[in-house]
Image (tube, rainbow over all chains, first blue to last red; front, side):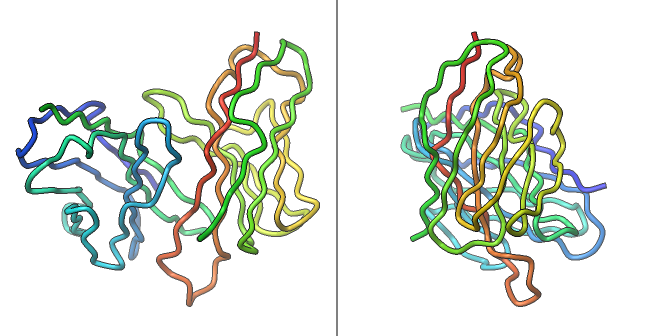
Length: 109
Length: 117
């Protein structure tokens, strides 16, 4: 079965602290994984995708096939990073995405 | 830049009404999707369409139907609205499933917050 798990509903950190949002997936074969972000009162938008191996707004995510994880990391959190973050898996049927339940990141001053 | 436009940001309807939510995309995308977003449950797929007049059920299709008469437009229909359909509804679009298009994301609209009284 294809599934994405985000174990933390809420993550609170202080500004300047490192942050890691966890994502685990269930998939056979080579997965395509994405992180989406939704700032307050804004639309859901793509943050990064594993296939691009990019760093966006200081965030990175590494695909670990052994641990079936795609955790999102940032070394120094900023207040403007406070948002809802969703991990997503592109399924066998390339048309479908599977989203985790989301993690709300709260960066305190 | 991809633009996905949902016709209403906020909508209030009454129980039993037939409700239409409209979504239009301007990037000639083959795929379009309807999700509902609820706290603690994330995004749940209601229906999606991979071509004009084609549709497939998602994870929670009960009580909903869809229509795709034109490539750019995808409508979600609540046949007889009920209070448990009060939610945020998100429309998304993406390019089709071609081998050369790996890494293609979904693009989302602003959402429609629907309240059923």
